Length: 422
Image (cartoon, rainbow, N blue to C red; front, top):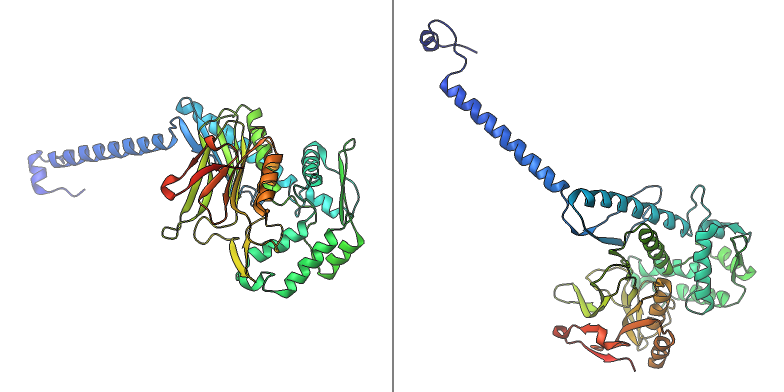
């Protein structure tokens, strides 16, 4: 520090490093540093501090299990003090991630994972029995039961792969089989081949917990002719159902019971001690805002599951949904469509709820209702499942049909009303 003459004189020839001005500056600096430390500490505490209430539990990406949590949302209602909530949150996230990854690997029909015999292993075994363990065996046995009841197909993976290539193509009008004879012929041939009873036979041995998939010569020839590499055994729209159902079971076994899981595919699982979760029946997409239009809602009980399906987009630009007009018929296209030849459906939106936790059964009924082409078929299907409650929106209508109308709240401001499904 360079001294001045005045400083030297004032101090009797000695240097003064702390003048009144420098002392004021030093104090101001200390105050500023203290304030900064206080506000930074406060901000960090606020970031770490947790109040009771609802939080979204997000699963972190894992390159070893790509896309395992895509399209899934988990919301949980925490209680307790900040420290307790923080500890619960970490435990819950670890459990959620590990369970999702485990079942995502088990239910993967395409990719093999070290140390795991999954659906891909059964597909690759060329008809030989594969030891799949208790968990995957239980899934396959349940899905096979639904398939034998005519509710779904779990050996129609070739069609599912072709369908998805069509629905998610850059220009769907060019790839849709209604406009592309080559695709139509390919799908028609596949339908004829898979209609044979021995086309793809899944054999389950409960005593050994093994599964084997045997393909007919005609199906093998079809695969060879079109050089297909897609799996035949594929849970398709049931995949999310089993993933959510078994994840929810694992969470509840560990005492986590106040939350819900849902998927972009319209599935919801409400944990056993949770109330006040609304399930929406959608009516379309607002032409002005591009936002979803809700036709009606119902409140899900703790322990209930629901499947909401629709044949139209609910926000602008949603992929996988479109419609074609062909020979005077409306041809709706939507994810998990099971037949490209289906004409104008009776329903455009459906919600199926069950209080017994059987989400796969709810999903199967929802898609069967959506695919129905006759009003009588809708009534028969809805009446046959005594454990299901349904909300239905007929195509071109603003009247919601419900098996329990008192449990449904229509969006009257949007012009919707509720009537019993008769």
